[in-house]
Image (cartoon, rainbow, N blue to C red; front, top):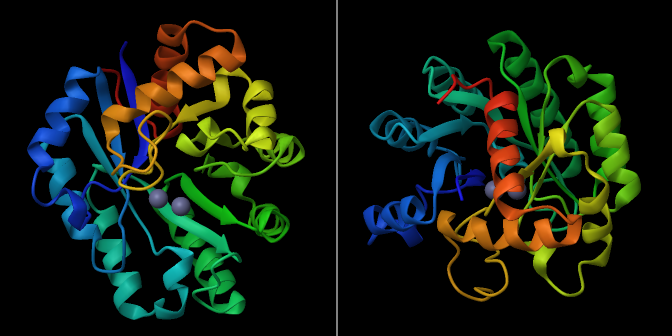
Length: 258
Ligand SMILES: [Zn+2]
Ligand SMILES: [Zn+2]
């Protein structure tokens, strides 16, 4: 199978010891494209450098809602500098996380809206993180006219109604290993209804390894386990779903043809 991992965090410390082997295993699994997302403020230059060093890797830049209270001139400058690289294909992950509430809600909303504005000025799509916050997330996306930018709702953990609302806004929906967990029945219902031209698959590595790797450090090569699970659920061939999700990843991030 030839596949994409639409969202991972390759610059994070759990990969510092064996990043080259992780990338080699991804290649052996057929992972032809990875999008690496900054793990924290200050991480964008490392993501850009990694993307510039490997033709399979592309990057995003943006401040996670967990860190929204540190959205300041340094964070703005980091994002703008990263967007000067053609290897940086989106602004994200941005949005709301009202589950962990690591930054106050007002700060999350301010950083979210302002980064959508920067994405618009830079002509980039957005990567959305939302946790326990789908209502406020949809409201901001609508108010900010995010339909024109396009983008991905990453690590989808909502229900079918939320999926429909996001599809109506023109967004792609990316499923992670969480979809393979036995209790994830709402997510699985949503995964059945997303049309083939809007589905993406990701690892969010090093977090959230899919069944049967659950509990281990996640890595991009494990995306194939989630693809096989989703293909069974959707009554598709794994190779077809993998190819379609790869094509969608290229489309949403406006990547050149392979
Ligand atoms: Zn996220
Ligand atoms: Zn992430």
